[in-house]
Length: 157
Image (tube, rainbow, N blue to C red; front, side):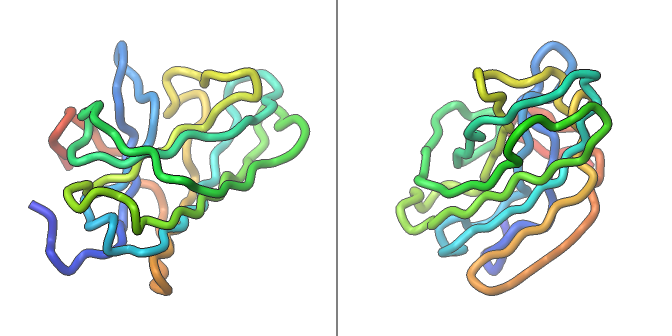
């Protein structure tokens, strides 16, 4: 159960596992709508061995991880222009007004996207996260990434 006072997440997990690897990253539980404004900066590293050209990333909310009943809020984003070289770190920034998110939604999930669509699998090997920063309605928390195993609908630490 989520802490009723938590209005901003403090962890980002690899999530939405498919064939042994993650396909997205999700926050820990918090009252998404109470955040009012959600901002997330994520630094990835390109370990694909190929130059990447990024497109619009995905962002959605839901009640439980692995639940495919999602809400797609409007959001703004910032991605690198041009190619991201192999071995290069790159930042994706998200900004989302959470006022329209359903009251019951407690997770935000993000997924980078290539310009032509899709992403690499598994995410945690192809483009691991090296750093992230959350900001919600004026409060800030910066942290380093912890690798945790996710089971749909449940968090195992």
